[in-house]
Length: 216
Ligand SMILES: N[C@@H](CCC(=O)N[C@@H](CS)C(=O)NCC(=O)O)C(=O)O
Image (cartoon, rainbow, N blue to C red; front, side, top):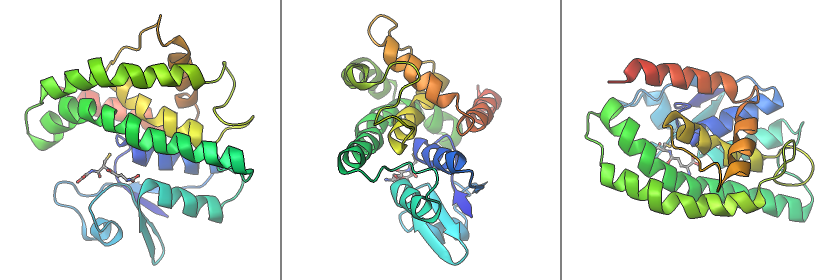
């Protein structure tokens, strides 16, 4: 099975972590950006990563891919069956994919993707607005809901909620976005512990090496 994309994308990284937790081997292939490969375009009609191929079957969108993997490889379950746990799991994934990533993308896209991979200058005003004004209230929310060390966001086992919420924090840590140790200590400890899992760590190390190579 192939995933097209870069693990620098929090959506791609989330899919890779889900597969890793399930012990499923995915072949991560670049999209060919900026001249996308025909294989990527065939799987992703709107040119968004991640895209996915399993034989003749193609799919785009991280959540769609994760539901496919969950159905095909049910153990360990990362989307609980119990109604309230399932509802909360999907809430946290949606929160991460929309509210958290939208904010994080304004910082990461401006400071990393535009200058290093697109040859376009950073819009520092937009990045600062996101970092200083938009991010703190999102972290305030997380600070209230993240578990004590060793715990999980939903129920008493790891779920998609933990992987989805932690994934964008790898981008914050790459950017050295400081989490206020007085205001958000639990969020920092929790996200660092999820990102230290073997399902995330090798990808994050490769990302850090790439960012070091492409630094000005
Ligand atoms: N809802 C989609 C969002 C995918 C997405 O927006 N990916 C970004 C990278 S983080 C992308 O491919 N952007 C390129 C573009 O918009 O052209 C998912 O969950 O996969």
